[in-house]
Length: 239
Ligand SMILES: CC(C)(COP(=O)(O)OP(=O)(O)OC[C@H]1O[C@@H](n2cnc3c(N)ncnc32)[C@H](O)[C@@H]1OP(=O)(O)O)[C@@H](O)C(=O)NCCC(=O)NCCS
Image (cartoon, helix red, strand yellow):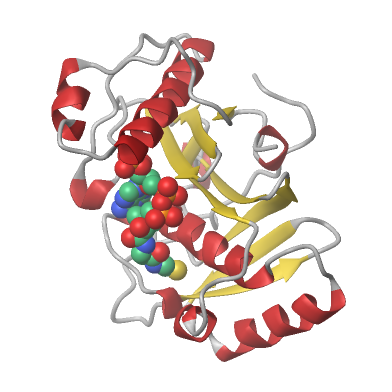
């Protein structure tokens, strides 16, 4: 599912059950020693996914520890993102020479609790969510909006080291193409030179799980001042 949402330069690994050969490094064990079983399971399985991706990229297995604000810390030449929800865990990694940031998020394909849509959505977003809930059943469009905002945050934070709020990104979606666009609404006072102004991503709704994913192409030196280019994935490509 995730592979189809990301460009070929990204290695994506998913798990829907707990792998028997999943292990943790001692420093990861220390992080999780007081966690309940559910947290231990998702923490361990998503790191199994990350290490499968490292192996596919020719990298040695390494611990994945939380850094600033919980963002996963990768080797200097690696970017990545991880997500877990009921019945689904995934990691997506790439070489930083190809991709400058990745954000992935999975959510159950179920409506948000009462009142949450209005809390996380801008008025324009609430309008398209309500429209698609009526027009295209089978997708929890409110939860999908939430997932897209989480993917935006997971892309933005490692790139900039700065927080953003739900109202700082205006999401539009293309149901037919399976894409979405996030316009970042930070004002001039909150923006820094070189900050991305928008992200484009892809999404899917399969097997009861909503997944959204963003990958930002690395800038090549000659294009330092060009806008952030976004790579769009194509079916079945994992390198
Ligand atoms: C951090 C956050 C994005 C995690 O998303 P989630 O849907 O709750 O949980 P997921 O299972 O999908 O993702 C969890 C993983 O996200 C990653 N993560 C945590 N903090 C992160 C950060 N600051 N930046 C990037 N990735 C982060 C971690 O790898 C974590 O897994 P781990 O704890 O096992 O290492 C979310 O809890 C949060 O704080 N959101 C508020 C900010 C926000 O979304 N703003 C919207 C801006 S438009």
